[in-house]
Image (cartoon, rainbow, N blue to C red; front, side, top):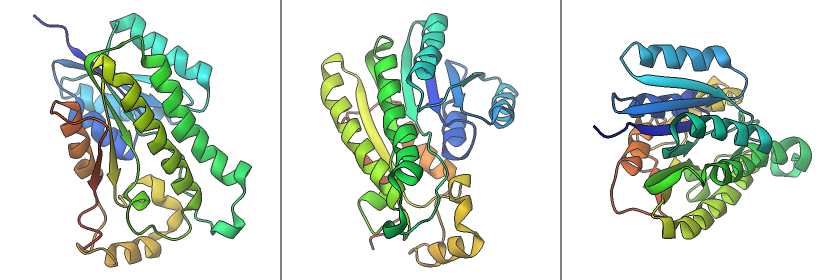
Length: 245
């Protein structure tokens, strides 16, 4: 009987990350949910999925802390010796601020450290456990490629740099037949947008052709499609509900 697949989802305690974990939870998989501070939320997702018969563990690490990420990956590797799916969702909450008021250290660097440095730490730490046909998926944002919302410069800067790292990883890992892709959702109903306020989110929804924001489970379905096979590598899957139309 083949051994079960091993999956790690960073930022898996809520929002899109939790929805991805729910999609990946299956009898033939072991899913690790990474969280930073909210252990209760991560445990809630774990317990809910365990209640459905899934094998789920939670692992704490600050994506900005290289040593912490390596410790987390070593723990996953010691227990399983493999990593079939790596999903990088971790991101700090958005703090709306106009470009001319952005501060590198206070506003942009935290986004860079969790998003870009976090992915770099993960992919470096995971390299020993990624095998032939392992899959890597990274969450970007549709705002990089179509009309961006206002006051999102710090987030866009980090996601733009992250896209560069994803492309570099796709190039360098292709010899190992590790598939690396990105998913760029449109604005999605998660806690990431909590600082925008209800009225702002209503306006964003009204401005969308479908008159609503994306749902986490819709983005998770797209991520799952890249993780479960297919001749797709180095690509960016747009999940925006037709924003550009």
